[in-house]
Image 1 (tube, rainbow, N blue to C red):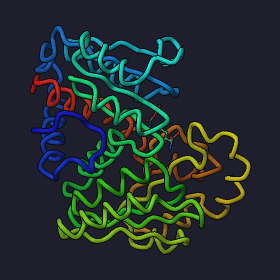
Image 2: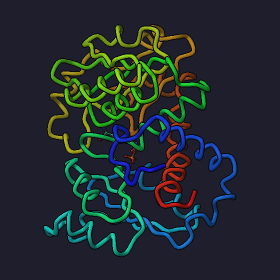
Image 3: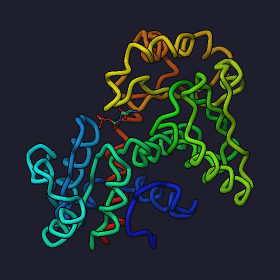
Image 4: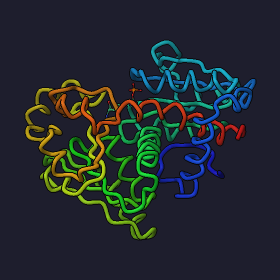
Amino acid sequence: MKQKHLVSLKDYSRADIEEIFALADKVKKDPGNFREALRGKSLAMIFQKPSTRTRVSFEVGMFQLGGMALHLSAADIQLHRGESVVDTARVLSRYVDAIMARVFAHQDIMDLAKNSTVPVINGLSDLLHPIQALADYYTLRERRGNLDGLKIAYVGDGNNVCHELILGATKLGMEIAVAAPTGYEPNPLILKSAIRDAQKGKSPVPTVTPDPMVAVAGADLVYTDVWTSMGQEAEAEKRIKAFHGFMVTSEMMAAAKPEALFMHCLPAHRGEEVAADVIDGPQSVVFQEAENRLHVQKALLLLLLGGA
Ligand code: CP
Ligand code: NVA
């Protein structure tokens, strides 16, 4: 893989993504073969926001590859006292072999990537969440064997997770239909970029509708995420009202294909964006999806850090 960073799947080709998936298969099947692969290497992990999956899967993943990870809460490093992201990138580059960061402003990820001499991985920004979409589509591929021509229905907020799923779907030859309330649709620039990719790669063009039943009709995968993302807590009440009718229910699942899967990046709120009987029901693969974060990110680290 020629990529230096992972800012977004937008920058990756289908072949790059397939290379990660193929290596993830090997890492998942025989983790012991990779125990020394990143011996002596280190990953700095900057967190401006909380995390369970991202932190633990990267930290344990580096350990399992023979390297180490440093958890740097933004509140504990000099970023908190106004040191710039640019200087932070320049300094960390001299100590560690890669930087993973979870940030508010997507510009911080861009600045890190631009000013770091080591690989930078976007561990979620307000705009995008590429490592999540990688694990999601890897999980779908495990379940279905082949992604070509599958239909994804994303029901809910046009947020970071939704954006990356749109960009990934078009790269991988899948159709994606987003159902979002008016005012909460995906960012038009992301849609524009995905439409361009879809036309280039002969994938179906992503669509947006205000009607969840239209989006889920005939879908192979129904996906949702929280209505209030990290950093939007002040809007929570307003959002609950705006998203009325957007909870993924068993009636919605029944409109998808009979073999349709349900995914959620987690953490989830049962009784808000998803009904408990759906997320805890037989079509849900949310924990396989969460587990795959580990395997897919280990493959990504091996490719970016040269341990493959
Ligand atoms: N899905 C996800 O990124 O989870 P965390 O916020 O727990 O890392
Ligand atoms: N959209 C959510 C995803 C959490 C993993 C958020 O940004 O809070």
